[in-house]
Image (cartoon, rainbow, N blue to C red; front, side, top):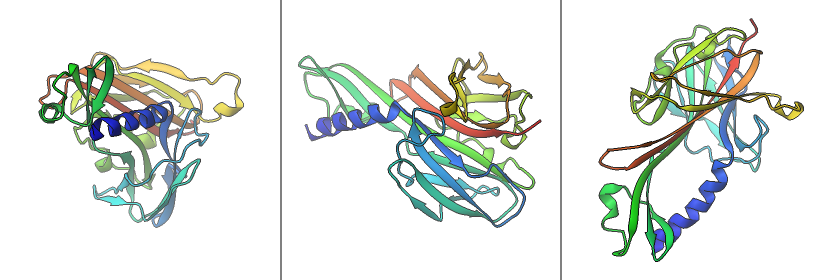
Length: 265
């Protein structure tokens, strides 16, 4: 019963959080000197880059150009936004990532009510009530990303983990330029995934009558091609929900946001 109550409370918190877009926003996307400091804002918000709710920086990491992952040197959680700082001590591309482990939840009907417990398919049998029906287990995961390059960009920090929803950045983030096409590929657990739904939005939404958001989707091979029409900072939000035959889950729910900058042509 305690597990069911805890899961119900978590569901209420999660629904509030999922109504907002989670993003990480670095102070700079391209730097020309080593030993520069980078500041990163974290928030969950309805409007692009207008901070609304500070989120925990505990799962925020930075991958250096040599592939080594580090915790941020200092961080702070605020009410509207959180912030973290780190020193970039080498040339190349850094990966900023806010991501926790995958979470498994099993949903079921009991006495006419919809309930859930924190358990995967292998764990659920020991926790489900005897009269549970319509049992379904989901795997949920979200990550927010951005990339910062110092002097010469490289590829090491762009490597995929082959876990969850990811972007294969065929166009390097440091090479995104307004009015030029960008080509990326969505991967799910290391394999191309088709028909990923995407929303692309640009900074300055607060000052426009039309939010100007663009709805896109990946093709049959997972490729996403688009052309940013104006220079500035963007956030790409993607999600996928698929049935699964995995030993641990019946359904996969994944979301990803990528913050990037389109340079002047």
